[in-house]
Amino acid sequence: MTSTHEFTRFQSAVPNRLGTFPGVFALVNGLGREGSLDTADEAWRRRMNDGITALYLDPTTVDPTCYDRQINPGARAWFRCTATHLLDLTAEYLTVLDRYSVPWVELSTRSPGTVVYADDVQVVAVPYRHPDDWPLRERTPVPV
Image 1 (spheres, one colour):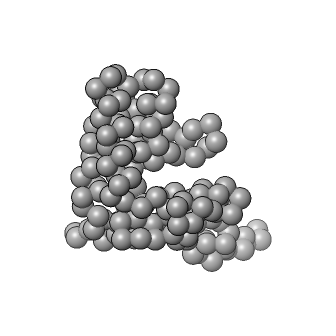
Image 2: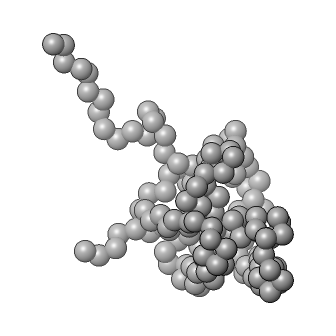
Image 3: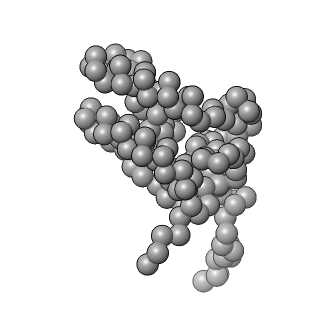
């Protein structure tokens, strides 16, 4: 079977206090903010974040509302599978998460939700919701 997904996301395996699943960069940055990274990993995190910021556009600099919880509830970033350089960099972040025993999962899809931002390496999408996006017909219960 050939792969048919176009988008990949790496996120926490456990929801945070808001019930959302932070992405890989947020997880590593959270470790840094709380002082959990050792000196070498913290220096690496800062260097990598600076490099990624220089290479890739932050969606909020184009659309400050793309992650707004009221306007785009649950919006999350997905990497395009064609963004191999970014995916390679992400693998290093996943290694750090593994080293600090932070559980994460990889999600892949052709349809990440309602896209509210897109560029050549990523999209930000609001997850589909029931009933608006439910693709199946609701059945009426048969009386007994």
